[in-house]
Length: 444
Image (cartoon, rainbow, N blue to C red):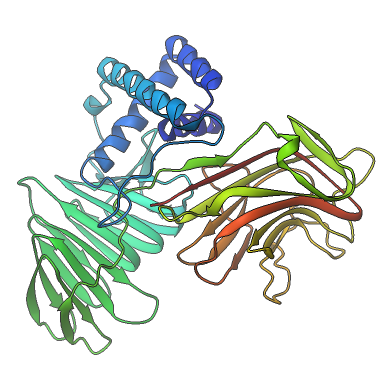
């Protein structure tokens, strides 16, 4: 299976696919056993990791599957059809009966916007990764879902660093994580630089910031919390929390409703093709706008988003821009050509070819901050995905679509900015051809 098939399956699971494309996927499932098997593995692993940790955070609810193009009705039918296909594939191939490597202590899967590195012995399981004892996970962004033995699941939010010590123990060196243990198996032990947490059937969240105290918040059950430095131990129950500072002192407190992700996060489409000319408001120039393309020289067109994004139930925005070779002009010039996001009529974000002589894609987060260029030039028309995290303000550019590759530009916006308008265009002497634009939101 190639990368495109993995992306295709993720679109099916997210309900982010046209009716015609889904019909084609069903036909391929009938004639390609390898695709059906891979889909079954993806769906089974997703079900396993979401079965007890469904939702976006401790008190959250799932975002509805919908799209601007097809509305709720088609999204619901697609989700239902996907369940039927999943059931048939799972019953036929029974991926849970695959013999797993004895070295695997955990199975890890990632959100579509995740970027990660794994050091140590690991193996591809189709829709997930099996990791051995001692493996180190560096999650640059996005989320990772972890299934440990015998009945422990966890969701990690990047940026984070985690080491798999055994099937019942992990070390969280940095980041935020929610742990859940059910069933009658062994206990779970989580360590951080300052604490050790042991539970026997509970749900709790841990935050390990780059600077500041390590914190633990209990939602369900009981957790034994120990300070590594002072060898002090306290018992925490549901609603309790505690922090451990640099000197090792444990400070108890009531939990403050701290947000911890409990699912990988569903992404839904808020804008996709075909282009509708009447939706775009011209500012200057005379670009050509057809269902399949926007192109021209020295032009700008605006589009209002249906609502400010990311919306209240989401935290991450993904914008995938596919550009083509302009006719009779250049994309890279001393001027600019690309896409901008606005908030309350102010431009807050631009990506594409920025002002200046450097012929490369770049990122401009405004705020009187210099344009952010990649370490190595990224030249020419291509597909680029922008990721924006509302909670952290982090913005990054990635070649291609999802799943995301390592970012080539990274910046930051002030926290909490919601985007309500976009602009596509090019300055005098520059040109831009856009073949497609896909905007998705998710994460909670």
